[in-house]
Image (cartoon, rainbow, N blue to C red; front, side, top):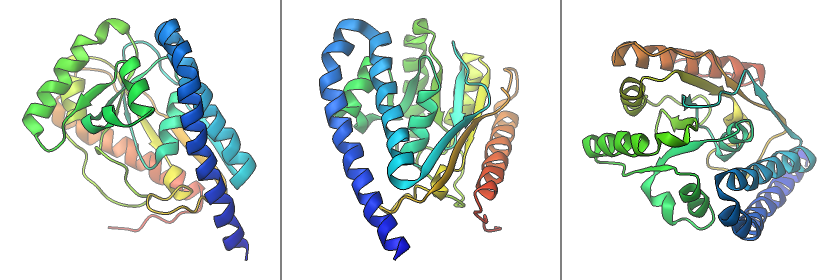
Amino acid sequence: MRQAWQFVRSVFFVCQMYLALALVATLGLPYALLGGRRATYKVIRFYCRWVMVTARLLIGLRCEVRGTPPSGEVLIAAKHQSFLDILMIVSALPSFKFIMKKELRFVPFVGWYAKLIGCVPVERGKRGLAIKAMVEGVRAGREEGAPLIIFSQGTRVAAGAVKPYKIGSGVLYKELGQNCVPVAANVGVFWPRRSMLRKPGLAVVEFLEPIPPGLEIGDFMKRLEAEVEGNSIRLMAEAGFVVPRG
């Protein structure tokens, strides 16, 4: 009975979350267009905080951001387990932009704001061209000085699942010569990838110590994966999730 009630609450939460997305994005668009990027960030952060507050009230899921969120020109290489970890990361940053799938430009609401903050679209499946376009797109927008967020595995990955890290993070790290801040997460424990059920508990994203520029790409990729995966496993264990041993 408790599980069934949690599922009902989850469905209500998810429905209101997407309704709020449509309302906030639509009503906030004139403000964002007139006020520029600073106003756009405010609209986005308002929505992020709305989701986090309603998650606590409606499904018993609390959100906590640990570590020191960076600012300025820095590469953020994050674990991506659900929609919620995106919102939690964004809520902690003064400015930001993403490496994102090209198709997202045409998604209502999300695509609008992605364009306004200067996200860099990448066409998946064409690795060489995608990496070249990604680097060129990032360089073209560097004057804004915002942290650049990339999900190093290229997609959402369920809690405990194993998926290789893509070379794009390493190429950006090498080409841009910036600090890279890894981000670990346990959000997928509570927000499964293919289920409407949302579980109560403490969802955490953690900004880790920066990796300074200067490493070779191979060494950087090994260090990035070790830090993000190791700390994500630690956070998932704190949440009571047992990661299967490969």
